[in-house]
Amino acid sequence: MSDTATAVDVKPIVKGRNLVKTFGHVVGLNHADLDLFPGEVLAVIGDNGAGKSTLIKCFSGAHVPEAGTMEVDGRPVHFRSTNDARAAGIETVFQTLAVSPALDIATNLFLGRELRKPGPLGQFFRMMDKKQMRTQAAQQLSDLGISTMQDITQAVETLSGGQRQAVAVARAAAFGSKVIILDEPTAALGVRESARVLQLIHDLREKGMPVILISHNMPQVFEIADRIHVQRLGRRAAVVTPQSHTANDAVAIMTGAVQVPEEEQQLGPVR
Ligand SMILES: Nc1ncnc2c1ncn2[C@@H]1O[C@H](COP(=O)(O)OP(=O)(O)OP(=O)(O)O)[C@@H](O)[C@H]1O
Ligand SMILES: [Mg+2]
Image (cartoon, rainbow, N blue to C red):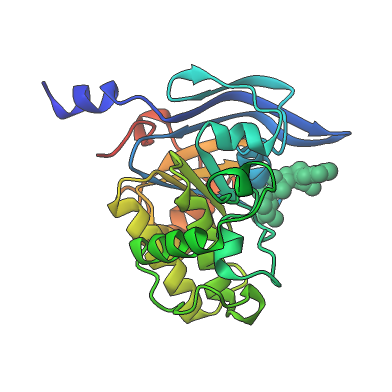
């Protein structure tokens, strides 16, 4: 069997076709496609307003598309809420970060799915098993190679931006998810903090966790992505790779200055 035949056999873990989403007269998605293959980091790039966030919000259950189809693991899905998407194994770190600053790291990790004490205390009195949550939280952070947060009982508001982002990413990675979506995870971060989050994405990829990374940071995208989905005017304009195209090429595709024929795109998996 040739490499090409093997590649064609790999089915996307996340697939979208012809997705349409409008906001009144504003078109967010105009027949957009999306494919994420197992184990890959897919970068999604595009100009402001190109529909990147809208696209991934369909898969995180925050938006319901008006037309088009979505599949996870080959099965059709119709998400009505972020809980639906989570139940299907899709965890999203949104562009506007969703951590609760006043709560500690462990509590943030388990927000919305707190562990209860065993027996009647948990079952009837809904008492939280803080000790168990702390133990598991510490384990999850160390599994992810996050060593900068020593104290799991530290309030998130006392963490640096990068550490907060790390908590949000750890939270997404922690719950046996199949897919992690990160919308601009480093946009508000400094150089060192960005590097930390980038390292987290590397770690996730090492573990074979597929990641969708929305980013405006071209060097970052070209360093970490297996494939690069270029979103333009509400649809997928092309999919290229860091090997096939340069950052300048990618910007030219983003702005519409250049179009890429389908046979020069990387629509299938690279590995
Ligand atoms: N809730 C909303 N209500 C109205 N219009 C919206 C809403 N969300 C997105 N839009 C519009 O849909 C289009 C796509 O927006 P989207 O947020 O997906 O862009 P983006 O590619 O993520 O941009 P950015 O790089 O700035 O984050 C834009 O024209 C935007 O103004
Ligand atoms: Mg956005």
